[in-house]
Length: 310
Image 1 (cartoon, rainbow, N blue to C red):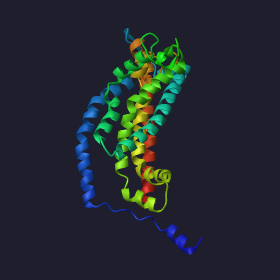
Image 2 (tube, rainbow, N blue to C red):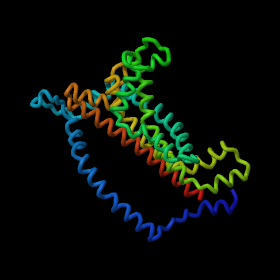
Image 3 (cartoon, helix red, strand yellow):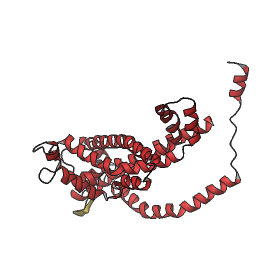
Image 4 (cartoon, rainbow, N blue to C red):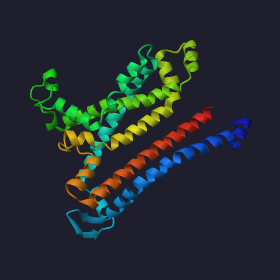
C-alpha cells in the first residue's frame, strides 16, 4: 500500500454540513407529520398495550371471571405449537411469491405507463383499476370464478370437476393469484414514481456509449431507482405478511392455508381465547416490526453507498 493511500485511509471522512435550508425543510417535515403521528399513537397505543397486557393471562371471553396470570405461558404455547410454525411457513410462501411476481409485473407496468406515447391517462387508469376495488369484493369475485358450481375457470380450461379449494396448493394458487391481481398496480405506481426520478441524460449517455436496452435497464435505470424499489418491496412485504381477507373469504384457513393473521382471528374470535390470541397477535406485530427494521437498515446502507459514490 502506497504512502498516499495510507494517508488517505487515515484521514477521517469529512462530515457533510447541513445547510440552514435543509434544517428548515427537516423542521417543516417534522411539524407537518407530527399531527398524523400523534393521531396514530392515540388510536393504536391503547389497543397495543392492552393486547400485550391480556397476552399475559390465560383468559377466555366466555369465562371472564376465570382469569389466570401466566406470564409468558401463552407465548410458549404458541411458539411450541407446530400449527403456529405451519402458519408461519404458509404466510412466508404467500409473501415471497406475491412480492416477487408483483415486483416483476409491476415494473413492466411502470415502464408501460412511463413510456406511453398516447392515451397515457387511459393506460394508467386501466392498470390501476384493480387496486381501487375493495379487497373483500375482489376475493369473492376470484372465489366464485374458481368455484366448482358457479365458476367459469374449469369450463374455460377444460378442467372438468376439479375442486380448487379442496387441495392445499390449488387453494394457495388462487389466493396468490388474487393477491397479485389486486396489488400489482400499487407496486407499479410506486415504481413509476421511481422511474420519473431517473435522469434522462444518463440513459442518453449510455446509448451514445453503445449500451443495449438491457444494459441501460440494469446499469442505469435500476440502480437509480433503488429507493423506490425498496419502498415498494417494504410496503408490499408488510401488507402480504398480514394477509387475511383472501384467506377468510376463499378457504377460511382450511386445507392448510391458514396465515398468522387468520390464526390470530381464529384464536381470539372463534375460540374466544383472548390471552392466546393476543399473544399470537403480539408475535405478528413483532415480526412486522422486525421486517420493517431490516428494510430500513438496508435502505440506510443503500443511501450511504449512494452518497459515498457521489
